[in-house]
Image (cartoon, rainbow over all chains, first blue to last red; front, top):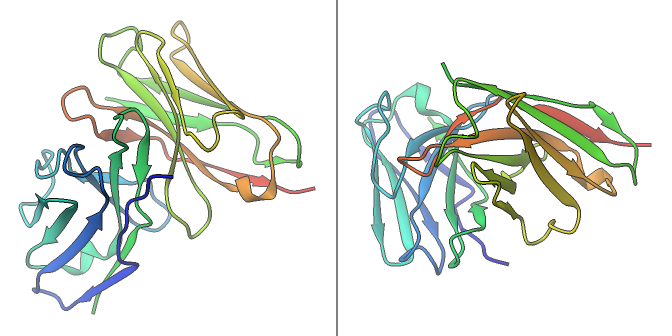
Length: 108
Length: 120
């Protein structure tokens, strides 16, 4: 089955830059989406179509794509950014949605 | 204001059929481009997409679960219903419904989720 691969955890100090990657074969032809999920809450989209930021999401969140890897970058990480981040895309047909395993971002 | 809310049993027995309802407001599933999906998350684990239904009644299912899933809509009640047959303890999870935004194709609005435990 088609899978998106994320690192299980990333740790950064406040003010530093966090980068979370997501890799899969179909990412060059399918958009990626990033969701932030805090404990006990539903996910919230922070990046859509690889690099677009929804209204209301801070500018420190950005996304990029290169080949089979997409990256969520959080510049100037704040304590409130500590959360689980989920990558989402679709298989090559575009009809079946896939989520990555999630990355726990810890702000030291 | 767009909202979605999941409802259904908190506890089901193994082999039973689970029926979950997503009741939404602030949009209509008769509007071109509107889509709603079900997604689940076992405790401490990753999100898993289950199914999607579109404004034109097109339906799509997870390849690994499609033989057990049925998604439907009742536009008069603003509801999307998911049934999952032959429930097993590994199906214990929080089940979310979410709207897919027509302009971004992202899950832009989620329900709060409903926890379902499968146990005898």
